[in-house]
Length: 135
Image (tube, rainbow, N blue to C red; front, side, top):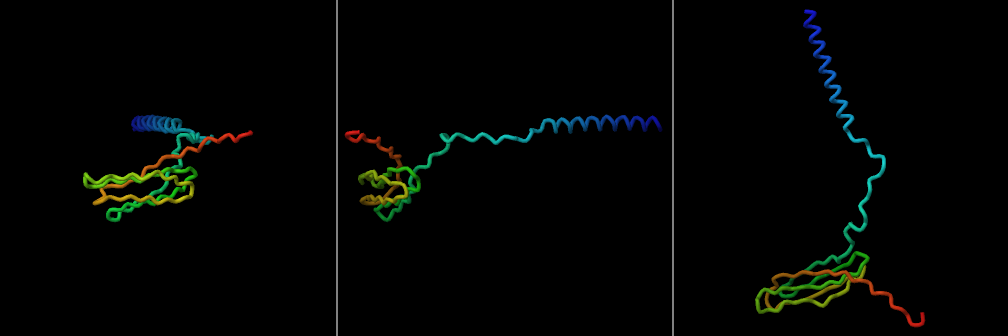
């Protein structure tokens, strides 16, 4: 009986040793908490704040786009209207500059039905400073 007790004790000791080694390996493999702040992504890769918020309304044959620019750069917008009948001419509005915190309304129409309407946006580059005479 004593031999059976020693064998059990030996197996229990080996099992405890293996379990302890496995737990120590898990604890050792766990990453240490970061002490330094994470590196931020450069601003060049961040999306640019640009583009007016436009809402297009189709009422029969007339299309109206209401655009508001919440960003600090001027946005050049154009309304494009595709008419349904093949013989009806599509319409493209003249470009309109929407300054920061400004609002613009663009309109166009078809003779019969409107197939689709959309607004395009283009950033307005600031003009180069002009040299004043005598400076």
